[in-house]
Image 1 (cartoon, helix red, strand yellow):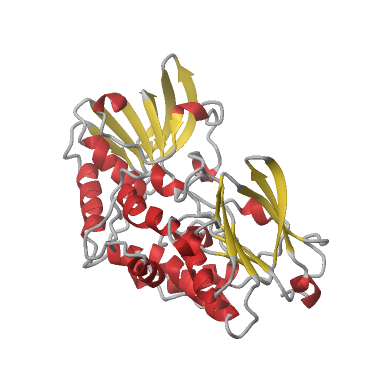
Image 2 (cartoon, rainbow, N blue to C red):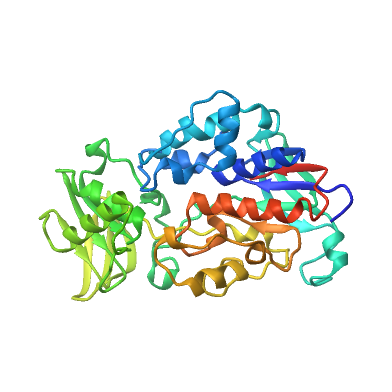
Length: 403
């Protein structure tokens, strides 16, 4: 790296904040750029949802140490927090710590990252390329700006980039025109009237399972649940040690078995098209029983999320053709072939490196289309990166966190 590099950490969510604390512990100056007006904006979006992982799996060693030193109470134990509790009791106190004071710039988004003076195809994996600083294009409250960095950690997450709901993962005909009628984040159900009528839910992961459980409990709601897999196993883990996760699996199985007369589950199904129908949306499904049309009052698409890889399209990041994640980490995760997020091995620095030296994709974004990421894993990734740069390599003279 350059003799006095500037280090950029992209994102002020849980992993980005932990990275900032790691930089503070290493004595590296840093600044945090966050696209939203608050830290942990994505977590706030699902603040009403309870995690199925307990406090002890969601707090890093660094977080605990800094909170104790500042006199803040540290949540612990087997209780599983909601997203709102995670923000209020952990992430907001962390953002207010003296170690991060003056380093968090809100409302500033990293639009693109490039190598200064080089295009994507130039100086492939060379020492000359590694020595060139990164250029960041930023959208700030005062307009466009640029910043320079020698080390970049992309912790921008995935939640703001939902997948389309059509067959094969592309938008279904009519989906783009009706985008304003489709809910793509896990909805709160504390106002039953909000979801009165017929709700079409698409997806089968934990977010969709949570939505199905909550919507099925609303007496004024008829739920039609479209699941692509012909025989879904709902992510069941033998002898699951996480009760919340096991409860979701059992609830989904019960709904599939027809125990709720207001719920219809179509497995082996994909969305063929959507079109407006007055105040409703008419959706054509291709089901195992043939083509069906449903007039819906609400459409909820929870088909997963992927990160914004366009952020680093001018960098030499080797991506897995199957998952869209950085190749080394993706290969390790696919080789493990485990469905239990608790059973994943801690990542090593070799798994996190890409041909673009000094650039790392970390956190949920590093998993691409894989859905087994835990916050604990993100904190372990930070450990691996910091260990690789100190003391073996000269620590950065300045560190910035960017979203």
